[in-house]
Length: 277
Image 1: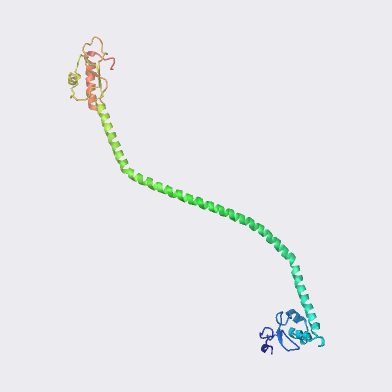
Image 2 (image 1 turned 120 degrees about the vertical axis):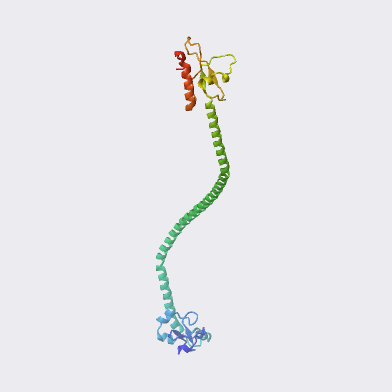
C-alpha cells in the first residue's frame, strides 16, 4: 500500500519498509526527517505503535491552534514531548561521543604540529638542495663552455701543425744539406792540414816550386799550404837540411809516402833529428 502513496510534503513516493508517518487527523503520509514529518529516524524507532497511531502532522496541529480556546485540547504535546526528549538525548549522546574523541584529536593535532616543524626543516633542506643543484648546473655549463673552447684550440693547433709539416720537412732537408756541406768543408780542410818541419829558410822562397815534391816522389796537389817550420834538431855537423814531415795525412797512401820522406830526411848521413824523433 505504501508504494502507491505519496509524501504530502515532498510529493515523493513512500517506500514499502513501513518507515513513514501517517497523520491521525488528515490521514496524509509523510517521510521521516526534519523537512517532511519532523520525526527523526531514531525517534521513530523509540516511539511505540500507539504513539504512531495518534500522531498529528504539523498542518493539523496549526489548524487546531487557530480554532481558539473552545476547541478540544490538542493531544500532540503529550505525543511530541517524548519524541523531542529522545531527540535531545540522541544529540547529547552524539556530543558525548564527540567529546570523548577530543583527547585523541588533541594528540593527533600535536603530532600534526610536530610534523609541521619537520616539514619546515625538510622545506629548508629542499631549498638548500635546489640552490646546490642550481650551482652545479651553472658549473656544468661553465665546464662545457671551457671544454668547447679547448676543443676549438686543439683543432686550431692541429690545423697549424698540418700547415707546418711541409715547412718542417723542408727545413729538415736544408739542415741535412748544411750538415753535408759542413762535413765536406771539414774533410777538405783536413786534407790540407799539414805541418812541414825541416825546410831551409830562404828569402822570398816559393815553397810550391821547391824540390820537396820530387824528393818524396809525389804528385803535386794544389792544396793550401798553411804552415812551414824550419827544423833545428839536427846536429851542427849536418850541414844539409832536408825537409821532414811531422804531421801526416790521415789516409794510408799519403801517410806512407810522407813517412818514407821523413825516414829519408832524418837518417841521411847517420844523423837523427832530436825534435822529431
